[in-house]
Structure formats: structure tokens, C-alpha cells
Length: 320
Ligand code: KG4
Ligand code: ZN
Image (cartoon, rainbow, N blue to C red; front, side, top):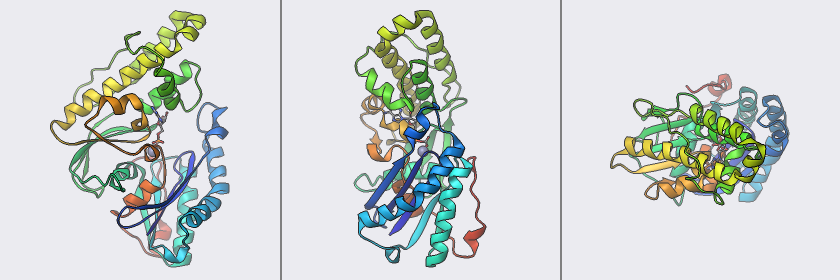
């Protein structure tokens, strides 16, 4: 059994996963309310809150599964990419537990974690497949040939904003709450996706670009004026979402050819995206946004470090 820890952004999360990919416990303490009034995650506030929550969240995870540290065989922890102060809280907790209990420590790439959300029961997807990883920080097309991370190839990426960032910025322009993806998803259900025509950027190869779309929404909102925006908010949300979903869907089809398609990350929770890719394997909703079950899952396919080797391990803000 692997204990997973995830603190790369504004979720303090711990989970227990067996070697067979069964989730024994999955606890996520979201800090979203704490950051909402600032319209985004404040890194220093996130670090401090992680520090307060990490102990209780681990305790709750163990008691939810009815186990103790004696039942654990390794600690998997997100080492990056993410907010450096936030990552250090999870990594330090993992080192302390691993050192004191004589357990191996398994550093995990956050992006590997998102892909490994597909390797848990009942999905238990087997490579090869083409994976769209769309979150608040990343939009990647991955060629996945193996459950390890070394053999995953990036075949496309965003040249500017991530898809989740496009959702969040669009939501902000429409005066919706933070984070905006789920809000746009909800509001779009009452709107007409063909009411406004927003552009899908045509960039070469298999890359994405979402900054022009955000600007198009900005100009539309300006031209309409506050009263018309308020009245047509659902149409704006539906049309804006439609453009993002079309961009993602077209590219993933191009990349995959006749291979299996899978979608992961926070944006994979989007109902319009899931509906427009009926043939795709999507991560279960609870495992799309950040969680530690996916980190524990990835830990099963990653290198285990022993003491004192892992004590020198550092967190990293950028992708390796
Ligand atoms: O994977 P995630 O939890 O964190 C990162 O690693 O970034 O993704 C968070 C992103 C946010 O941008 C959020 O707005 C977006 O996922 N998101 C959604 C939905 N739920 C979350 N975007 C569109 N539709 C949703 N239902
Ligand atoms: Zn994530």
C-alpha cells in the first residue's frame, strides 16, 4: 500500500492506494475559499495553509482506511512542478514519515500523476493511448506507450495559456467566481454555444493557443456593455466553452489517429468536453482535479529512494 501526498497548488491531499490500484482512502482539503477573494491562488497563503492541513489530512486518510503507518510500504509525493513553497510542505512531510518509519520515498511528477489517474480501478487503462492532459497549468498532448513516465512523449502543448487558465480568465471576464471552469460548465448548460462565434487558433503541428480566444471574449464583453453581458451571460459562457472544447477535440483527434484517446486533468471534468469525445476514456470526475490518489498511483511506476538518499531531494517549480 502506498501513501500519496499532493500539495503542489491549493489542494492539500493524501490517499492510500494498493499495488493493484484500489483506492483505500482519498482525502482532498481544498483551500479554494481562502483564495477566492483574491481571484487566484496566493502562493504564500497556500504554503501556510498546507502546513496547517497536512497532518490532519494524513490522519484522516489513515483512519478512513482503518490502517496505521505500519501498513504502508512507501510514500509517494509530488516533487514538482507547482508552487515551490507549497510543494516543500508535502515533500518535507513525506521525508519525515519515510525517514522515521524506514520507508522508501517515491518522488512523483505532478503530470505523471494526472496520467496515472487512469491506472486506478475501475478504469485501469493499459497503454498505448493518446492522452490529453488539460489543467490549470498545462495543456499537453501525450503519446503514452508505457505506465512509467520515461516513455511518455509530449507531441503537442499550449504556446501560451493553458486550457484551464482560459476557462478561469473567461470566467473572470464574465464576472463568475474563481476557479471558473466549473462555473462556466454549469452556466453554459443554459446557453447557446452558437450564439457567438469565437475563434479557434490555427497553430502549426499539434500545439494549442488560447490567448487570442481570451482577447476575443474581452472585446465582445466590452462591445456588448454590462447590461447586455448580464443578460447574455449563459450564451457567452456556452460559446466560449464551445471554442475551447472544439480546439481540444480537433487536436486530440489529429494526434490520436485511430489510437485510444484518454483525457485527464481539471478540464477533463468539463461536461461538454466529455460529451464531445464519447469514444475517449476519461478519468473519473473526482480524479480529474488535483488529488493524491493519482500521485500514489504514479508512485507504483516510479523509482523508490531510500534513506539517506532521499533526504537531499528538492522540489522543483518547473517541469523537468
Ligand atoms: O488539474 P487541476 O485541478 O489543477 C492543476 O494541476 O492545474 O486543474 C484545475 C483547472 C482550473 O483551471 C479549473 O478551472 C479547471 O481545471 N476545471 C474545469 C472544470 N473543473 C475544473 N474546467 C472546465 N470545466 C470544468 N468542469
Ligand atoms: Zn493538476
